Image (cartoon, rainbow over all chains, first blue to last red; front, side, top):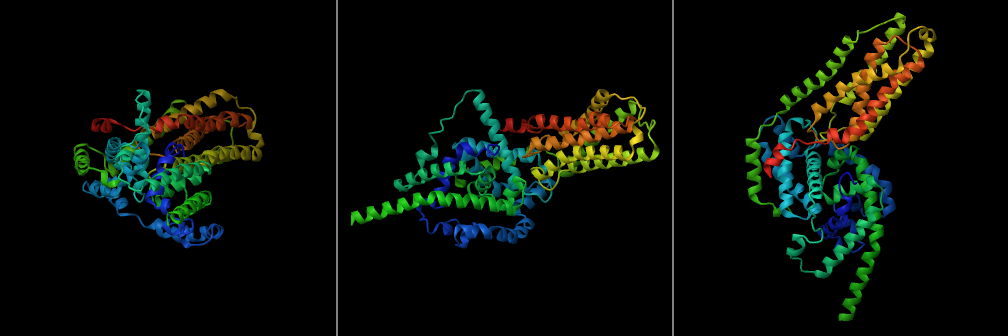
Length: 263
Length: 225
């Protein structure tokens, strides 16, 4: 996890994630539905899902492996010398990369800069891209490497970034302050839960849920099978659900109390 | 967050990419293969400079088996250690760890088994443990350096383990060459002079891997800033 640079930014990232994925608004009962494509969407109890997970994972495995995304194919063409393919790659990856950096640096200008550097590095190293492999994990590793290099340079020159102040926080037009606070608290709590999980579960979860990689992309990045990644992410998800369930229950109870008092 | 990306960024990146020369895959692979081959050829040339292959007092059957087993090991090391696999971010942890551990263990089993089957081969030949170990490492350094040169600027996730496995593969190649030259067949000598260097180069790779394979050429990047 440290190698992928997640640990220091979990609280922020999880806060954002909790907000955008709707966790902050979800009750414990419909968490599975909110989680979308996760195995939790089966709507079973946690222990049933744990048992079912490998079977489902295996069934989905082959289909995911064999299906390369348009950006993967475009990168392959780009590596072969088709320059126009870079546009397709940019359209598919730039938002992903920007989100990846933004969640860690919370600095728009720096994130743009890193996205630019990443694409130029990908261009420079395009000949080394292996045919049939996925471009997103490759791009993310380049981006992460450049980001860490930049951070090291910043530390060296003693330019400390104020982690507390972020442009997003100031300019965020979120209206529901209470839900925002709850999302942040939830994010911090989720970060704590994730920090207590085994590294492989934490990394798999973060890559899929926070960074938006597909299971196949995360599997390639982690050097393991898609089913293993799914299982790890699922275990992390179940742990989160169990740990954060109390927070949801408390919020639901408080909301009910407030609404009851108001009436 | 994606909507925050300015439209000018795309145009800027596309323009910079057009103005910056970058090798296409076939050219990159050609260059990379040449560098890797050069590393191995340097080792081979060094062996020839040291006097080449010497059968010495070893029997023909024993020497043939030694050559066969060690060449197979070295070939496996080159194929799986120097090969790139299917992912642009490097081979899986399992594959790298298997290679890093498998090569020295394979070498250990080979020399032990052959010493057990041919107990009389160990008699008479002069024994220079230190010299053989140093020369084996020296012969393994060139392929390792070749790999680092060929693969710099590729993006690997498990750099330490990758370098360790390549170190083991290079060490196996170096040891294979030295085994063909050194006529001493004592088990202790084989372990110290011809198996330990594999471990030494794997450890060296693990220690330096992060630095050696972690460097990205930043000329483009710096200019972009």
